[in-house]
Amino acid sequence: MTLPTAVDGSTTKPLAPCGYTPAQVRGLYGLGSGDTGAGQTVAFVGANASPTIVSDVTQYSRLHNLPDPQISQIVPPGIYQRPTTPKNNPGAFFGEQTLDAEAIHTTAPAAKILYVASSNANQDFDRSVKAIIDKHLAPIISISYGFGGESVPQGFVNSLNGIFAQAVATGIGIFVSTGDNGDEQTTLGTTSVDFYATPRT
Image 1 (spheres, one colour):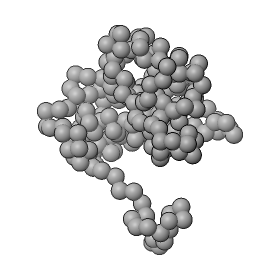
Image 2 (cartoon, one colour):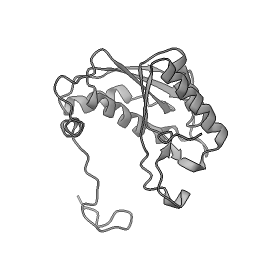
Image 3 (tube, helix red, strand yellow):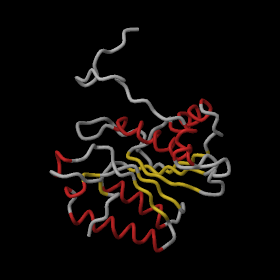
Image 4 (cartoon, one colour):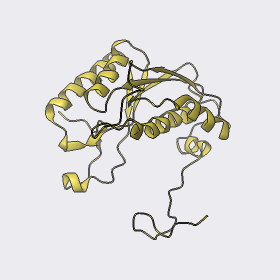
């Protein structure tokens, strides 16, 4: 096997990111052996739907001595079969969905996980979040998704603020990643976390 000498033009080592083990992640959050999430359900949404998410997370769990995941899915008809087009690449989202499920299972290994699929990463995504809230499918929603804060149209922000206010009013907690797009300076000219994580009015 020939090792790479550069990644994206950089020769700084290590050339590949090194992930944390589940034990390390739990340690970072101060989680003890009794912090398992038992009795809870955590829902998350993803564009399209990975057909291998259950087997992927099960394999991850067995490699890291975690219990097998309790994953259920709500996938509208036709989402698994969506073709790849210039505007739609279903497989591009599969890895993110698996990563999200693994992160939830790592921090709450005894919790149930509900995956709700949307047909795209735009308005259908938000409809899927609202469906979880309207039907009270889970008391916790995890969102690993976002946009560069100030570039989001105000109408979109208003809609999401309403959905999140409904969640809070009905006792549902929503937890959102701050984004992994660097500091967003190329988009905004200043540092900013992503929207959904940053509120706007």
